[in-house]
Image (cartoon, rainbow, N blue to C red; front, side, top):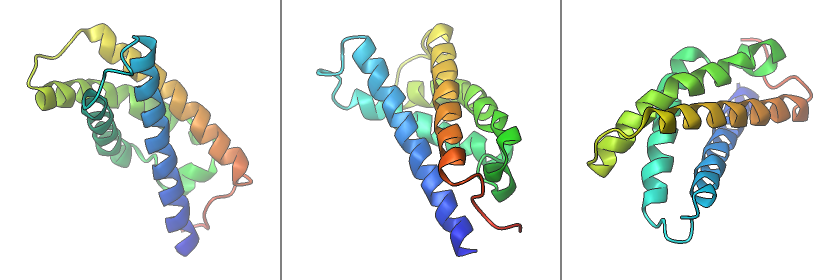
Length: 134
């Protein structure tokens, strides 16, 4: 039980770091990182919330799915599904209308790739076994 809880927290922390990395990369790509200020939080927090809201029912944190390379599609799919929710949450948080569909599509695609890379690294790093059978 303890090792599964530890594995889950490592994955959640890694997911948050991956989301932070794509958030910062987005601002840097647009040349606004130095002047972004609180807008970084207005991107990071809704994306993290959307990821957790969608990821839990999709099973991205279950013991069986963390162990199996055949389940690496789950975080990818979860991020694609989380992107529209992120767009709504971000617009609500900023008090602005939902911005271009392209923005949400880019976040979904880049986020899905980031999750695939991070979760693949995690799977390799943990020796392909992260938690006991439950």
